[in-house]
Length: 314
Image: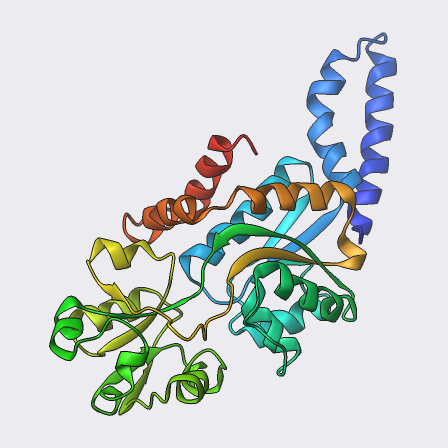
């Protein structure tokens, strides 16, 4: 992995200082161990940058968890937690501007192969994605039990008045409706192009909003949009009693979380730390901590810390 020259020099200076202190104190090294351990561990292990696309609760939480377990193990971690679109965060990873990022398996795959089959299981998607990332100098780590995919959401009033339960039900009425979704939706295979191709859905209007965040929630709540795109693990859906329309033709891909890490930044310890976090992520567990951020407005860092402690990972 890449190391910081400053850390290496710092370690050398620190070592000399500790040696001098030990000699002058008559060989009692108890104070040396307590005052020098943390700094030398950081100097030895080097620095890493964790990045992520967009600023929405669930991927911020996973990225923050990755950062915290690495810091706890003695790495210095820089955070770049709002890199914008997937295209931008991918380029940052491939170009070495960041070392690690959490991703969603089935949504990352078509970014690397537009013709890839995204209808399979998480295992099948991971098997396709891993060699594509390997060609970029990036390793795909284990994926989570949690699956956060796209959910097209309506209010109960809209569902009742139009008879909506599935995505197929939208096709005959979509021309009179407004969709609210991220700005990239008109170009994404799982959004407008996929809705048209798979379901024959063409909305009368489209409003570009945020990535399944507060702006989208407010637009659904106020009636500014009739259908909104949220993440399936968003606890706001249940909290407000909204209806997530069933994806009855399986357009949406598996959205299991997985860490991607540059080959020149990894080692077995780092992979073990990241995989342990990822393995702990379940649907119910993610909903619970997302609610603390999205609904209770708690700090992402504080929520991540408490979760990791509860899981015995910190």
